[in-house]
Image 1 (cartoon, each protein chain N blue to C red):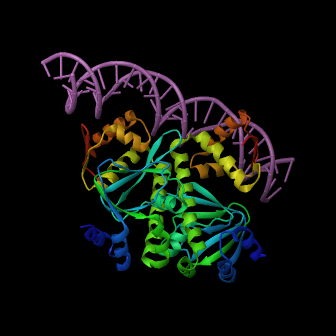
Image 2: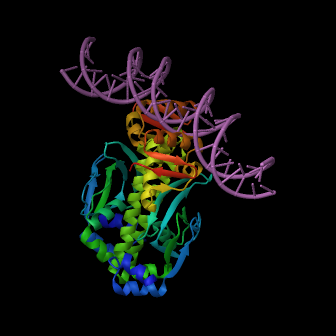
Image 3: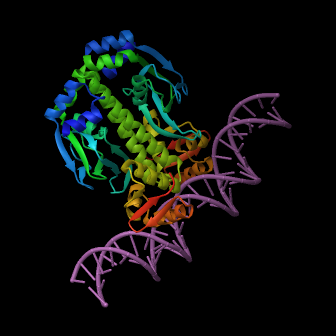
Length: 211
Length: 211
DNA sequence: TAATTTATGTAACTAATGTTACATAGTAAC
DNA sequence: GTTACTATGTAACATTAGTTACATAAATTA
């Protein structure tokens, strides 16, 4: 079962020998919706490979204010964990399963060894860093160049795409946390989007009518 | 001369054999102040190692709006270049020498080879990515959690530290570009900082009185 | 030195975002 | 069913940031 999922998402990424090693050594774990995978300040003992589901990566500053950084999808790994695992440093982010997810946890001892042994692993690691860097760039673009109404609409459509659904089960307050604004502002702008015919508002639910 | 600088900043980072290779293969280049090192959409043929000086990394979106991401100092390399060089992709940033700087340019052919051959190179690359990720995090924190007056003061003190000077030769308009706001806003907030006794304003110059 | 360009200062106004306060409507708990 | 809680809607106001417009001063050029 695990081998199947590994094969289906990673067989074009990793060479066969590496897939074998991962299957042998990796620890499979299932995450419930909203389960905390990594918390702020955690010292990672390895990195998670995402087999299925979606993970939300959130940044939090000292004052406890938070903001959504990006989502991980299957095939992704958490570059911050990699950083933390390799350097024995703390992790500056929080990772929460956005829906039921499956991961394979790779122990940090192997991370460097594999860099030498497998070209596919080197590519994967470098690639993951690059993808993460560009996600961060996109987040920065969003923060620096977009107004809150645009950010909100982008948030809704992005999230719907990640979850592969056209309606989201969420509250205005939750959205406010992710965008680092207030519930009142979110309600106001959501209503505006509804009036523009882009979404439909229900209790605990938002239907997206236009992508 | 080059060997000296390489030794002085990188001898604890790279093993001797790698230093030898870098000296042999790397292309030394001197950058004038404000010289463009990397432009948006460039396809990098290698990565620069910064020996001396300071490089400003700027993000620009499609509409030509820009914002400062961070500065590189000696000992740093440009992770975005690495990304671009390895993957043959385009570079999403612009890099400009903030003052006269010296770099060694490493051709991309060697980048992967060295990952296999030298543990110190693997560490350096991973480390560079990690440092860049945390710089990006800091930029995100700044954008998401700070008001413009705080961002401005942080900008001034950060830049002074990077340049190792207590006064900056710059105009209000230049600052406005870096912070992605308008000149009038910058002038207003600078005046406020001056009234608080934190800085002193002169033509083309800002003295920082309080760090 | 006069003319022009560049940099700064500031007022007045607009727009965007954040805050406080309260009303109402579902939903869950008792 | 009554009560309590949670989510949403909205008005009124405060603050922050962005814009337009113009004045003045310093530096550069003719």
